[in-house]
Length: 280
Ligand SMILES: Cc1cc2nc3c(=O)[nH]c(=O)nc-3n(C[C@H](O)[C@H](O)[C@H](O)COP(=O)(O)OP(=O)(O)OC[C@H]3O[C@@H](n4cnc5c(N)ncnc54)[C@H](O)[C@@H]3O)c2cc1C
Image 1 (cartoon, rainbow, N blue to C red):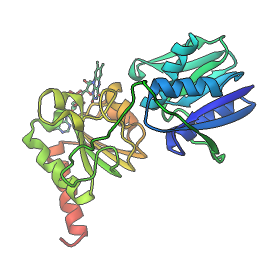
Image 2 (cartoon, helix red, strand yellow):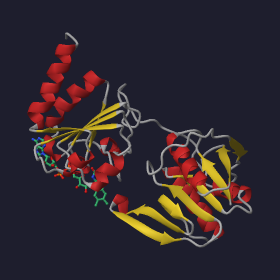
Image 3 (cartoon, helix red, strand yellow):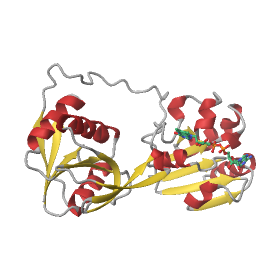
Image 4 (cartoon, rainbow, N blue to C red):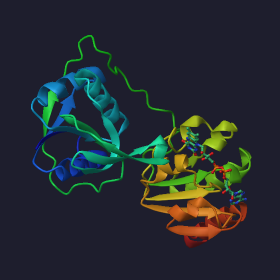
């Protein structure tokens, strides 16, 4: 078995993809593409590099899935995205934003796979990727990145702590207590889709399947029920503290720490204790 692994450097998702590649057995050759992001041109380079490979594996990132989809179109082969386990020709993969686990059979060669984020532990093996320079030519490519204006605050994607609010916050103004706590923790403020749909916060603050995927050290979910589509965005958090008035809320099944109660009392109480502990 020879496996070509498409990596995006030594990031977490690429190391998880390496674990999937290693689980297939045999040799793993890792490649990293250099040059402007051009999914179609990158796919062409990968297809060329993968001649004779039994599998092409990528990370379950937006880019990993996009590039592998182009590879699949180019080779006219099926592609299994967001795989959680491979057993020979059989595999399990996540579909519908995490609401469904699909058992599938993939009998084509090469097998085209991406690893579902956080379904595999990051590999401890050194990731030695060969660099393949790619000139996009006429292929569509990203020419510039415009960073969102965070007003000098830490961004949602990079924050070590995220204080996130759901419908339970009650209003746009209700987020003031979350902002205050976030300020003390050097945290970013996130929210659920109900909140962005209500216009209480901008879409850029939304965490979830159709929002930002975060992986902070601590995710504080305030008044969020724990719908699958929300969890899809925060399951990479190392620890989750849930504050919810309903002791039966689904979010508690995902929580490391749970507080049952009214967030309008609990959040200011945490803030007050933090200030006290810091002597402020
Ligand atoms: C295709 C699709 C994509 C989606 N993408 C996303 C996505 O990216 N992100 C996302 O978040 N959702 C997404 N959703 C929506 C998702 O299914 C849920 O509807 C949404 O996450 C629920 O938001 P919520 O938890 O804020 O609200 P609710 O489900 O209404 O939960 C509110 C919670 O607040 C608690 N509460 C109420 N008052 C208080 C209080 N005073 N103190 C403490 N707790 C209180 C309640 O007990 C309840 O658990 C998507 C849905 C679909 C169909």
